[in-house]
Length: 135
Image (cartoon, rainbow, N blue to C red):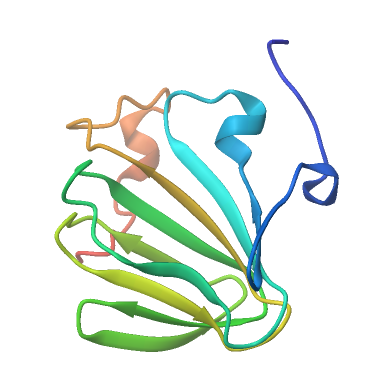
């Protein structure tokens, strides 16, 4: 495989599973550092992310609403999210799911096991005074 690839999402292979068009990004690009997929609804009411937890793999996950509206549930919290919304689930035990509230809904899902502290190439001074979700 080449050292890099540039593709349009619409040009990637698709796995159609009922009312969901799944684009297996990790598989297509041969990524090994993290899992990453896009799930797009073909109609409102489609289950984009089936109810699950990540206890077996211990994954942290980040979901990004790329388009449309999605009803996201994490634990007992439910929220209607629109494009640009980020949902970070650090606790693998929390159950989560997502259902398309519009036919054009699309979710990017990224996950992997916690690695302790992320080793950034950025200078730590760049983050001085920058709030986190826990602040």
